[in-house]
Length: 327
Image (cartoon, rainbow, N blue to C red):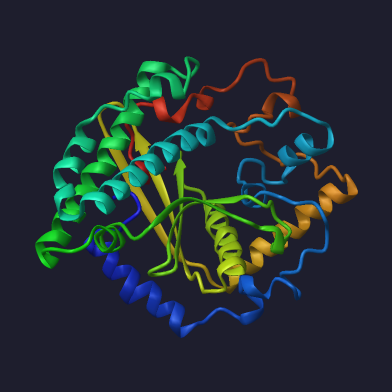
């Protein structure tokens, strides 16, 4: 499954990362439940999204400044738009599968098989006619079938091991994640609707799904969501996982970046939050970076001398097959 490690990754997570997290516990003042005290207490009243804090699109955050201060229409990078569609497809199939498991228990295997085979026909009206329709629908069907097949395998393994078991217990053991989970980030000065792509409370892991090349700043997204989850549930969230997907009509490739959400990441997120809140509170233009990423949707606004959008702005979901690790 997209949200579950392989056998080798599982050993790395449990024997490596979780052991590291226990040996070097997070400072209590950097836990989300310490939101009422510095350094977590927000000093400005400008709610931000976790993505606003962690965005790697513009190194200086000028994209956020243009959107908030000058009323520029919010522009979403192509990779982010494609990622949103893939995350919605993933969430839908997980939710449908858990409902089938809860209803039919061990007898859900036939239902899950049909779920894995069924084409993603709903995309015809859900996603409209503006995003290379045929290719996009094929990609969404592919990720849906990919995830449904792996859920089926996990449920079959659980039934083989446990035998007769209630549907609710089987769903909890075979698919122990919560997807598309809205959280109130208000305690940390963030939006009142910070959405976690997926959370596993069993091992305290926050997941974020991305399309496009890896970026170290993506770990700040899982960090921000972990802080919000800790502020809401008052239980530790020590691990993050950024899932990088390459999807086309024939293939699904993924790479999972598991990491400890330790003091350094938490401190960096808080500092970035404060800097961007301060920028908006004071209306201070942070200026352009020395080099603008070609994927920035504000590229022609900041650098109007450019006469054409670079080719790298093509939709990542429709790109030809490539290896994620080759960047």
